[in-house]
Image 1 (cartoon, rainbow, N blue to C red):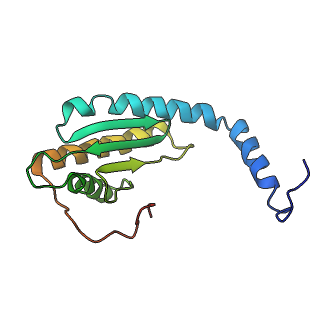
Image 2: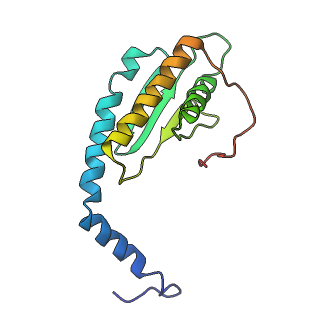
Image 3: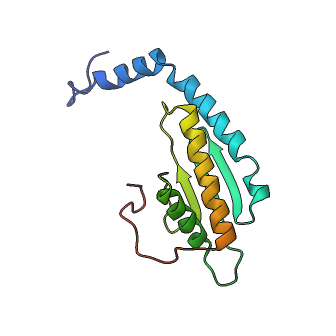
Length: 147
């Protein structure tokens, strides 16, 4: 196809990206990772009182949290889980909402994803046992979009 007006040098990039996705089987790999994550997180709502919902749309993953203490904001729980995850080396997003969101790389090794989810569950378990460690602190450098 002819290059779009204004960005002729950039027009080949999307085509080459799609070629790489096809060559390296990124989409089937991402489907496998999503199924792995969904299976790994499937019992969290049942196992943890602070987990109100687990959502997976492919590799767009989110866990919603709720406080089990009167007067405590739900997002304090989410921030505390995220803080525990960061301390364990797992990056996630959590703002003024009671969710922790993750968007793993499409080319991530399955064992890396499992390790990250293990560390997330360890963080959930910690906050469930010990309570919130982070409350209404100022916004982190991640703001609303991550680091």
